[in-house]
Length: 304
Image (cartoon, rainbow, N blue to C red):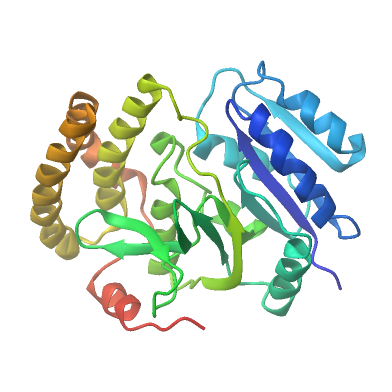
């Protein structure tokens, strides 16, 4: 039986980029049971017209939200209306080779219960899923890493739809940048592993904030805040007590870098907000947490 798949895409100032990438998605999906759901957080920029030009009305749903509740909330909103067994979270600035969806559907059909991290080529490197990092807690995982991914990156990830919903999807308060790592820690702590797919997709990266100083500052704020909130939510107390001084030193080093980038003030606001919100963030997740046993298991894992 063919894998039924919904491509879930969150849009924000994405019309020009989507006009380039969406035709490649349509060609890749030609004869496959693939549907599309678009959550548009900036519905006045023309994405709806691009979508209508490329897809028949019965093949997609378009969910506009001018309030811009964020990437995490957009993904959750789109997955909530998906009717297929699996969802592919795909950023609008990713191109699909002709055979990409056929290969992806075949891989999922062979192991339908396991989340899949799909590779992305960006900024001169190739990455598959999320990796742990002693300094920044989570980073894009190099495609050449020996161990398996911690979890899928939100830019190109396949989840069984029921699994994504059962875990509550992405934590919406994180808004963007770190919500996928938060889910990855929770999945891993619950015993669910992610496999990487030998498929690397061209990815522009950063189109929604490029050239906008205000949005660059907002990104710096969220990254600083969300690292602390992800740690508070998902790590066990013993591991958190070890991680906190390391994160403190890391943020001191990051502050120097943000100062050179002209982003020190939003970065420091993010750190302050993260410290204030950390206790509430910890109370919001009551499931399994990532501890030393998980850490050892992850560090000694090997990609399949």
